[in-house]
Length: 127
Image 1 (cartoon, rainbow, N blue to C red):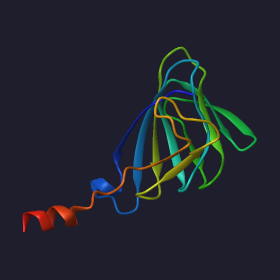
Image 2: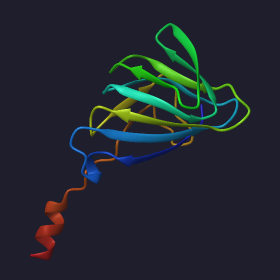
Image 3: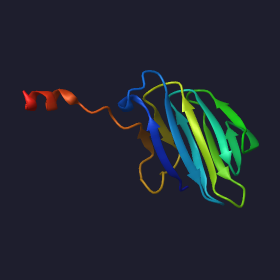
Image 4: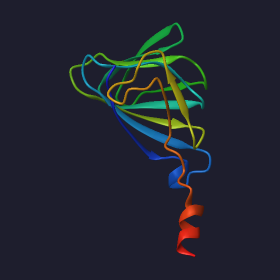
């Protein structure tokens, strides 16, 4: 289980009720089974993937999307010859994801959107 990920929009970037994750999966790799604390729509930008949602499996290619309810176990595997590029749209500005196995290369099983910085300490220091 190895992916490249970027979270360009979430609570710390000013979002109030949504967040976005961009991820890439190399051929033969997968984003393992996990749950998310918020509903998600995954859109495949390029490549071919097999998506699982509970006991269901289906193939998605560029331009296709899947709706994943909050806390529903799901995963994505690249079944093509090129890097799969996907974007996930969440219905919350802060999201916690819990994986069945360790997420590589970052290591933990539970990851969250980065915390919103506490600017009150900075304001006190500048006062």
